[in-house]
Every structure is written in structure tokens, then in C-alpha cells.
Length: 469
Ligand SMILES: Cc1cc2nc3c(=O)[nH]c(=O)nc-3n(C[C@H](O)[C@H](O)[C@H](O)COP(=O)(O)OP(=O)(O)OC[C@H]3O[C@@H](n4cnc5c(N)ncnc54)[C@H](O)[C@@H]3O)c2cc1C
Image 1 (cartoon, rainbow, N blue to C red):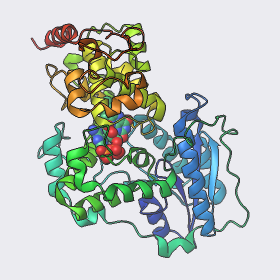
Image 2: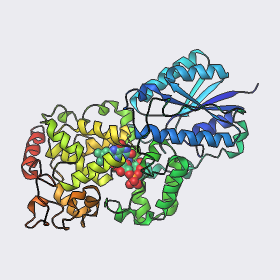
Image 3: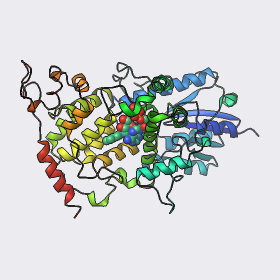
Image 4: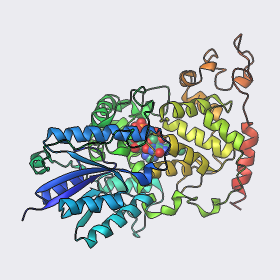
């Protein structure tokens, strides 16, 4: 008897090299595809959210691609824990396939879906797709998860075999996609309860086609990555993070490109992809770190948590030009360069003495590439509370970081135009400049620093140092 399956797309919004879809096509005769705009996530978001619009475009493109194959994407809006079992039952599906997700809320949701499906006699397959090595495939000799990056990376590389990044070929099986003669309706953003954002004016490449454009562009620059990746004023990084987050590109293809390309640039970039997996497996093994310090000694640190300072940080008005430029980049574009994420996170925790979780939450609200594992990992690294974190006594100096990584001040001038007339010596610390341009008044045109770095550094050392003794 022919068997039917449902492929449930979540943050894997592509058809190419898609492990769950390929498995479903291999094992079953008729495959239906579904995406659910999940109200358990959407209800908590502001009514304008760039991510919802980013996803909407990716889903619309996925739907159109399926239609070109004679099939379609069923698009639902509601709680997937109810909708998926109901749909699987209505379609007479024997199994539901999806990509395994390590976030605590997603794990709970999938457990509920699997249980309901089981009661109806329908199988649930959550397959590895977002990572090269799943949560428990890279363990220490004692069978424990790695908590330090370098040995994890070495073990990851030692285990890597071409079959781990072999791409899934599903083209020959597309005839098994369920036929749909009439177009299935897709809710508009408005019907989902969301307004348009500035996403289209930002001209971000969207969907799988946008991801391909970005990848092609980056492959031509990959050789320079190791030299350019730390400079926010230079086009050095790949800008692929939102696409990795929503799966409009597969991780296997990226790893394959890096290995085949070879050289310093490619191997440095591969390391970053391994950092991504390092944090993902940490989240799986230590889900409590999503809400509290990984290191117990740094739980309940007596942060000052001054709300006016927090507001100045959020708005890009701290008086430290590199911090302000970075925070304005985040607000304006929904993305921030990695070097800047480290600088502003360190500044929030060790200069403003504000709980890292406040900053983590702000990033989670604004980042287009927001990913719980990477964001939490990045914040705990900068705050020194994470497992393989920056030691607490290494405190970024925002002025020297600025001089080193934006030496000409190009990046600062782009996001803090009121400093555009300052020369490259004055722009990193205008309050120290002997001469400022005519017509520019510090305190009127741009704020004085809200804190003194040297004094705050001492306070941070005392705050963290107390826990060491
Ligand atoms: C405080 C803080 C918060 C962060 N929050 C996020 C987040 O929410 N989502 C996110 O994807 N990344 C996060 N990062 C990691 C990193 O900043 C971004 O992945 C990177 O800036 C994305 O730009 P890109 O795609 O051009 O990166 P590239 O330099 O081109 O790197 C390629 C890919 O590798 C992965 N990657 C790179 N660096 C890291 C890293 N340090 N940790 C984990 N994965 C990495 C990303 O998937 C990235 O797209 C955070 C870092 C810090 C310090």
C-alpha cells in the first residue's frame, strides 16, 4: 500500500540538500509539505518584526518553488502542537519528518507533537540537518560533552569524513511530492497580524535565491577572510548568519565549500562554523545556561543595572563612538559585526556593570540572525560567565579596540554622522582630542562618555574578583 508523509519545515526553509525532505522522499510514495506560522512564538513579538518578514519571504519563495514542481506548500497559522497532528491525520500521513532543533522551547514542542502523533499511530522523525555533527556525536573520551572550544574543534575535524557533508540529492524523487492543482492560500503578513518593516528598503538578499547571491559573493572573498574578518568597515565576513539561522542555505554545502576552497581564509571561516556547532551542542547538554551563568561562581553577581546607562547603550549614546556606531548598526539593520558584538557586550557588562542577560535580551529582540545558542554563547563569552569564556580580568578597552579595528574611523562615520568631521585621531575618543573641528561642540553635538573606562574597569575587576577568592 502506498505510504504518505508530511514534511514539516521550520527553520530549514529550502528544498535543496534538505535531510528530512530527502528521507521522506526516499521512504514514502507521497509527500506533503507544511510550514506553520507558530503563534506560540509570534504572539510574544512586536507587531513589526524584521524576522517575521524575512521568514515570510522565504516561505513564499519555498511555496513558489514547490508550485513549479507541481506541488505546493501548506501554510498554517496557529499552534503546531495541535495543527501538525491534525493535518497529518487529515492527510492520512504515516509519518512526519522535520529537522531536529536543540532550543529548549522547540524540544518541548516536538515532544508534545511526537506524543500526540504516537497516539494516532503516526511516526515522528526529527533528523539531523542544521549541524554536521549532532548534539552527542562529538564527546570526550569519557563520554562527556566538550566545554572548551579548541579540543572540541580538534575532535570535530578529526572525525570529519566526506560523508558527513555529502549533500542530499532529492531532484530525482520530486515526482513523489503531492500534486496540488489549486493554489493553497498563504496568509499575508497583515493576516498574520504583522505590519511591514523596513526589510525591503534594507535591500537584504532574501530567501534561498538571496542566500545564493551572498554565498557567491563571499566565495570570491573567502581567501581574505582571515585578514579582513575583524574590521567592521571592510566587507570581510559572509553576512550569511540570517540564512544559516533560517536554513535558506545548508550547513553541509558551506562546509564543503570551505574544505574544497582550502587556505587560511577558508580554514578560519570553517572554525567559525564549528563555533556555531560548539554552542549548539552546549545548549543541548546544558539547557540551564539559556537562563543563567554557565559558571556557578558568577551567578547572582551584584551588577549595578543602571537603567539610564542601559538606555544610553541601547540607543547608541554612550559617548564611546565605536560602541554607539555598533548599537546604531544593530538598530538600523538588525545585524552587527562580530567584533562589535564582542566590544558592546564587554562594554555593557564590564564598563556599565549591567547584567549580561539584559544585553542578551536586547540582541534577541533586534538581531535578524538571533539564535539562542550563539547569542547566549557570545554573551556568556564576553561576560566571562560562559564555559570557555574570556577570563574576567581581560576587559576590552573600547578606545583601543576602535583604534585597532576601525583605524580610519570609516565605520564610525557611517553610523555616527555627527562625528563625520573628526579626523582619525580624534574620532575614537573625542573627549581626549586637543583640537576639535570648528562648529563641533562635545556635550552638544555628541555626548561626553557616560562612564570612565579606567574607573569602571577597576569596579568590574572587584566585582568578579570577589568570586575568585
Ligand atoms: C554577544 C554576541 C552575540 C551573538 N549572537 C549571535 C546570534 O544571535 N546569532 C548568530 O548567528 N551569531 C551570533 N553571534 C556570533 C557572530 O557574531 C555572528 O554569527 C556573525 O557576526 C554573523 O555574521 P556572518 O554571517 O557574516 O559571520 P561569518 O564571520 O561569515 O561566519 C560564518 C558563520 O559562522 C557562524 N559564526 C560565526 N561566528 C560565530 C560565533 N562566535 N558563534 C557562533 N557562530 C558563529 C555564524 O553562523 C556565521 O554566519 C554572536 C556573537 C556575540 C559576541
